[in-house]
Length: 463
Picture (tube, rainbow, N blue to C red):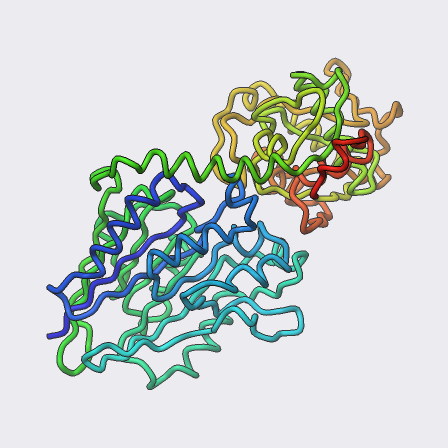
């Protein structure tokens, strides 16, 4: 009987506060002599540009740390493939010591990215052939504007599996598609033995068995590490899979962990603080509403629209007067969000405003998680170019009553298309996702032109 131990992580999201413990745990577990072989996988979203070190190094700090974890294979998540520009992703894995398995992402011309392979066969010491397939979240609305072609999951599996037939004894999928889609694959592809999953942040302490397929996932942020055992008979057939997770909180800390963790953030802060953006006047000093207004002007300018909307909860800190750095912007707006140009008929714009006004008081203190949001509460909605009369329920656009038959364009965020509060945007909006710049980069570019650096400040600028 062959005993395999599979260590796995998912959705680390640059939570470097857990990395020292996780690194020690993995390196120690990889020395385990009680099993025949150990493999270590990551199921995507290992980086998150809400952390200053990741943002400052374009994810290279994450790659360096992941190299120290000795992964045997990974796949990417949406935070790698969508939250980075195409050119950043092309260079992201230049120094990686692990293969990236990714079957459903292609360049625009249909070719395989040079940094990834569709599938891989691992040969154990006892001759068992382990087939690996990697899958990322199939989001065409986000991947296509970023100059990638993402393939749907069924199309991908139906294309890959016949080519791999007869080449493996055990089939493992490393996926960043969420538990619902993992369940779909388990029900429709009985060839699979194990899915090491991510994306939906589900914690499966003892895995989930669907049909005869085991699914594992460790929650999020490195709070747990996956530890799955597999027993394979002498004919290379899987006899048993036993998934479980290990809480990071129970792993022994070292005395210098806190200093190391603070050092990651401080290094990112130092790099970003050297990159000067603009010289803001007095009116922006700790004035959140002033920051909102100029930010709406920024996204409207970027999208080429007269109208825009933003929510106050996006701004974790207000701006300050004087020199604004990339670190200030990153701290204020850590979200991995992109601007969307939405085209709506006047009647649908009226309906969108009604949805916003109906939800206004509910959203003001609503605690929100996910959908690229890195703040605490949703906050109040603000408009540029739109006014609403609550008595008559009339919507005015640039001082005139909205024409129900005319088309209007409004600058919004992909976040607003994704949240369930404003269904009009997602259902009837003609939405153009504008890549690759993040919200904070769009705002930074606008402020740099409106309030340019002068003199010695400009000489020190590196961006």
